[in-house]
Length: 210
Length: 210
DNA sequence: CCGTGTAAGTTAGCATTGCTTACATAAGTG
DNA sequence: CACTTATGTAAGCAATGCTAACTTACACGG
Image 1 (spheres, helix red, strand yellow):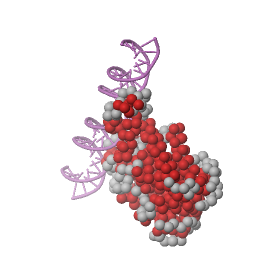
Image 2: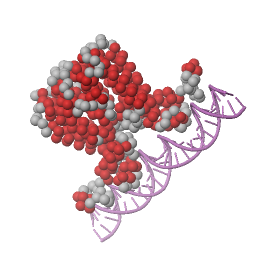
Image 3: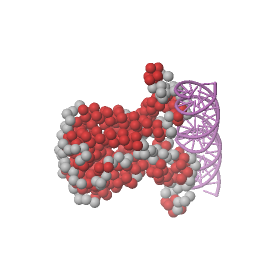
Image 4: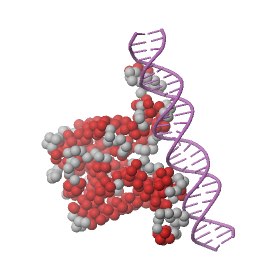
């Protein structure tokens, strides 16, 4: 109802009554997840915020888990583009580009801790969803490409894959510990960028045997 | 009721009716969290498994979140002792000891992914609980001491603290990505131990400026 | 040995939730 | 216009978190 009529007619091929309730629901859920924790959301509350009955969401999503998967998919797209633009701000092949990808990652976690936690803490139907699986691999590919450029090797190289994964591990752990307030007092003064650069140099500069 | 009367009299100073329902509840919740996901547990079901009414748990815990905090606290103790025994299996000051601590960490995550996820994904009242906070710091101290011994520096040294934290980040991320089945196909053949040793060498071998 | 306080359990109930079923309405299509 | 499909509502079910009021059993001072 609050949508512009122009946008309504544009997507009129799929929206019949009230415009795209699906997108409105995802937005409402995202807000709820952010304010009430990753599991402190309810379909009823989301429907209430969208101004529809509590049964309406089930016309667009099979169940509660599918709504959450929708939120995660949308978030994953935003995360990937943020990582790509982060990498683009530094010369290709530089360690700074790798660190910038990590900074985009942790910045996303800081900005939307609820959605971030949800994205990686979701258990039901997370790995059975091929759409989410594909989105996840596309996201990881950003790291792989940056690591390959930095090492001067093709992205298919096993050393590149291993280094990219180790980088991901570090950044992922740093993000989680940060939003969990588990940053020890001693390193509170070290900012993200220094951490990321140091880790990138340590991991990319060392040969991996295996 | 199913407890042995001997055990009942031993702890009779605090257990009045049915023995220690508190411990039984925590065990039931741990099992539920492991089988039905970190949030797929219910107080009612836990009470049912313990053989009491659905209102009985509220005589021992204020609310649902406090039960979960109890489970997390108990799990954190087990994790810390596992890390300590892991470190003790290698000579003090060796890189292997550091890697062994990490291996204990990720082994715990693999063995009890539900509890592990719960321990670090819990949001409500997690950092407001001083008991959990203390347990967490004691756990991190194991890493700090191992890193200090390996670097030949006192545990209070800032470089030690930073390295320990970076190690924790890596292992934490690796653990999460592992239980989330987010290990890319290329590195599936590399086992945990190789990863941990490589990361420990990379992080501990490089000076950190900051 | 006997009242009494209190810890630990019970039943009953409330509000809310996830989800289903049955029904109503609106849009596109023949 | 009828027909199909998409989208919404209303009503209801079983389960949940949690509370209130009551009951039981132990512990202990006299």
